[in-house]
Structure formats: C-alpha cells, structure tokens
Amino acid sequence: MSEEEAGYGIGAVSRLLGVPAPTLRTWNLRYGLGPSRRSAGGHRRYDAADLHRLREMKRLIAEGLPPAEAARHALTLTGEPPTPPAPRRTSATRPTEAGRAGGAPAGAGGPSAGSAGAEGAEAGPAGAGPGRAGVTSLVRAAFVLDSHAVTHLLESSLAAHGVRPTWERLVLPALDAVCRRQDDSGAGIDVEHLLSDRVLAALHRHALRQAAPAGRRPVLLACAEDEQHTLPVHALAAALAEEGVETRVLGARTPYAALAHAMRRLHPAAVFVWSQQELTGATAPLAALPRLRPAARLIVGGRGWREALPEGVIRVDTFREALSQLRRTLP
Image (cartoon, rainbow, N blue to C red; front, side, top):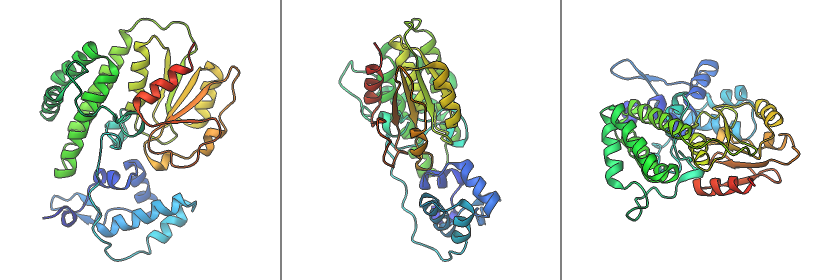
C-alpha cells in the first residue's frame, strides 16, 4: 500500500506543507479542515484531497485572507489533485527537533533548518571535526533510544571540537538521517524527539562550562512569534558562550511585544530572530521593534523570512554567517 493510499499522519503533513502541527490541529478544530479517513488501526489520516484543501488554506492566508474566510473557500474544493511529491529535505531546510510537536528544540538547521546552518553537513578533512563514523554512531544510538550513548557522543564532540563543528558535522547530518527515515517509513518521531532533547541538553551543559561572560552587552536570541523550532538559537547561544559572549534566549513563540520589552530592559548589542516556517516569517513586526541607544543590530535567520526586510535588518543564511554578524556587534 502506498503512502497516499494509507493516508498521511499530521507529522508528515506538517513537513509536506511547512505548517506547524499545532496550526493544523487548530484548523481542524476551528474550521473542519482535518483528516477525512482512518487507518486500519483507527488513527485519523489525511488523504490527497485533504492536502489539496490545506495547501489552498495556506495560500489564501499568505495572500492576506482571514483564516475563517480562507477555510470557507478551501472547504469548497473537491476532487483528488495529483499526488503531492515527497518533500526533499536537506540539513538546511528540515524542521528537526521536538519543537515540531510543540517542544523546544528544533533542529538544527539551524542553525536545524535553514539559514543559519547548512554548510558543513558533509564530513570535512581529518581533524576538522566529527566525521561520518561519529554520525553513524550517533544515529544508531538514537534509533535504539539509547539516551546515555547519545549524550556521551554529543558531549565528547563538543569537548573535542566545539559547537560549530559539532553542529555542522555531527548534529545536522544525524538529524537529517533521522528525518529521512521518517519520510521513508513514517516512523521515528520518538527518535527525533530523543535526539533533539539530548542535543539541547548537551548544548546547555557545554555553555555552562565556558568562562563567565566578559561584561559586554548581551546578545538576545528568540524565535519569531508562533515559531516553535528553537534548537538553532540554542546552538548559537552555546557557540557564543565559547567566545565569552553573554546571551539571553527567549525561546519558542516569542511575542514581538515580549521581545520589545526584553530589548528595552537588556539593551542588547544584537538581537537574533529565527523563523523556520514561512507562516512565522512576517517581517512587518520587525520594523516596530524599538530603536535603542546605543543601537542594537537586528539579525534574522531561517527560511521563513520570505518577504522584504525592513531597512537595517540583516538576513543571514548560514550558521557561520550568523556568528560572524553577531561578533561584529561586540567590542
């Protein structure tokens, strides 16, 4: 039985459409745009017609229609559109992390996804960082849910190579492998969640082991409002900690009003905002953030930022570029 015949689970639909699973659940509860079939085991599944309606819902909202009106139009669609192609993922575009299900970490591409992090997914020259053998060991440990082995491999790499090589050459390829297995079999969400949780914990511990910050203005890192993928900002925070830079991480789904309040209180040297999903990448709120004195450089990363950015906002496309831009703000 093909995947289309069996139907799609909410996680697969979230990846196919780039719509967070909590948003899909809201559309189902509020507007009736939900799965229309059940599997043999009684689980609700989306079919091709359901995906067609959801794509139309997403398109109309992006064009500015209120969700209720977009849903009324989407529900009028009938028929089975062509089978949607399987998503082609790379380490730079994959939503990884438990955050996909509403938790905190997110993949790394992030630095889990998109912009701040795709380069370096392939093993580099000897001595440049973790290699393919390390990735294989990490993936194997994750698939048997051996949290102790996963933690040991991550912490050993961080201690030996630091955050950026571990992120680019170990974490990203491992998350990529886990998510590809999900695409092939529909299983492995538990593996992704365990791996993402252990990555987040290892990054936090590594950051705490670094020397105390040097008393400079901090860097403020947050996810865009409604953006649930957070692992990229935690990876940046850990990498900055290695350089003695103080950071504050506000985490997932940070309301712009809360971000503005934190900016006024902290007077950071730089503010980094992550958007992995296009639905969370509205740029207008960035223009309303406070103008501080001394100025704070505003930097955004992630493939969710599709619109033109306000004047003065800097977009970064790789993990290294994000670090480079953030370093430039510091004395």
